[in-house]
Length: 485
Image (tube, rainbow, N blue to C red; front, side, top):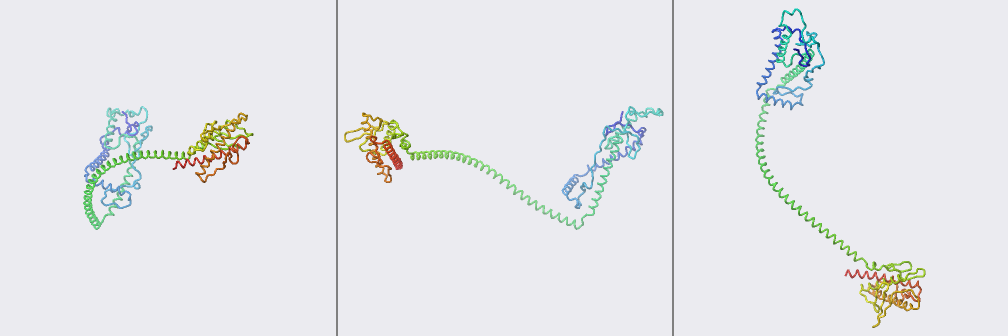
């Protein structure tokens, strides 16, 4: 059976002083432990017997002291039964006893040191540690001095010591020294705390209140009690008022819920109305946009001159053109008769269209637009003479009569243009055509082809187309005025 330190768990060898342990020695070892146990029991019983009211009073005092912890230098109240110590008064808290490392081994070489001797010492390593040394003189004692008997006695003693103290036994020399050092530190802290309590008690005794101060305090307490009663009455009134306000608030909350429901219904209807109104406004705006577009389109169409698009009269060098066809011919710039005939067809169609638009009837002549083979009829009484408004360019003897009819047709067209210009000048006094027409001449140039120069004939045709363009302007104005009226 081997002994071990209860702290570091190292194996121990029992000291020789425990070999022959009688009852007197055991009582001497256990007596201090019994006194300590009795002291602990008295402390527990005193705590248990403390009245509940006293405990509550101590707790209230503790709260008051904690509330005034910041005022360290203020004088304590006489009703306070304890004081809270600061860190400046107590240096370090109690520290736990560190245990030496299990790897360290101790040897009990001298049990009679300056410290309190331990009950057991470390056993040296080796097989001899499990049995005490053999002495030849011990054979007389027999079984009483055997190793088993000593170990049993020591274990019983250690169990009694452990049960009567807060330290488990046995312990090695090193653990005992460290325990002693820790106990000494605790003793120093307790002494310092005791000194602090003594100083505090001295301050309390020095600061005791006088009889006058006590009476003054009693009067203040009585006044505070009266104020407390008044405050309690006022508190009761406030509670009654609070209950009434609470009931009224509940009623108002119910009414508010009803109003909230009505408000939600109202906003739902309002939102639906806003949606319908927005749809109507969108449809109205769409119709307005369509109407504005149609009005602008109508105005644009009103301002559009159809005759300018249908009959485009322009100049190309020495030639006058209508819809891209040149009217006339020069030796330096010969023009095909097909182009000239097409130009005359467009010119006759222009006169015919403008006359119909203005509801104007030509005297003596009737225009028959037929493209490149247009004709002009002359009515004299019951007789009708037709003139071909196209030429061939063939001046043979058999074509002379046809070219003469072509000249008569051009003179007839020029006469119809004069009738139309006179009508326009009559309608619009401010209108003056650039070239005057007299019989077969326009701007003092003959429109006939026979016995005429090509340059003069081409120039006369150019003058005629210029007057034609002015006729288009007059017809466009008349068209606009008619639509406005």
